Amino acid sequence: MSRACQPFVLPAPELKKLRQLARRREELISMRVQETNRLKAPDKRLPASRHQGGRDVPGQPDRGETEQQIAEITETRKRSRKIGVLTAVKGVDR
Image (cartoon, rainbow, N blue to C red; front, side):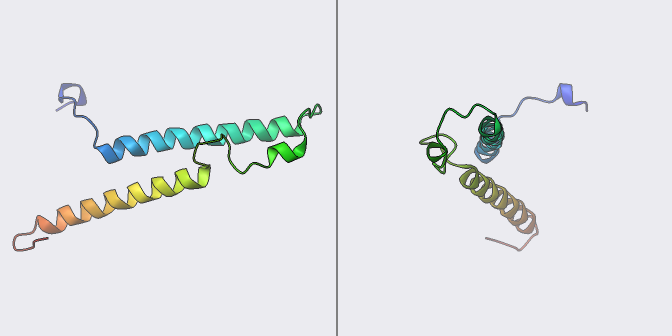
């Protein structure tokens, strides 16, 4: 059966969150590159001390936190698949 004929199914909440985190990660990487390029530019109007905030955007998780959340969701999905395979065997129960 072709993909076009299959009904639309909403993604699992974990998959939706994973996609959001991946998009956010890409945004953070892009912002980091922009900031690095800005600091390397010949006209540095902001003092260096203002750059050393530790976060890309105030109030938003940094890239490390986003990477950690992606890893946690990925690991949870892997475990869910393994549990599904194991419990599909007759006689095996959670």
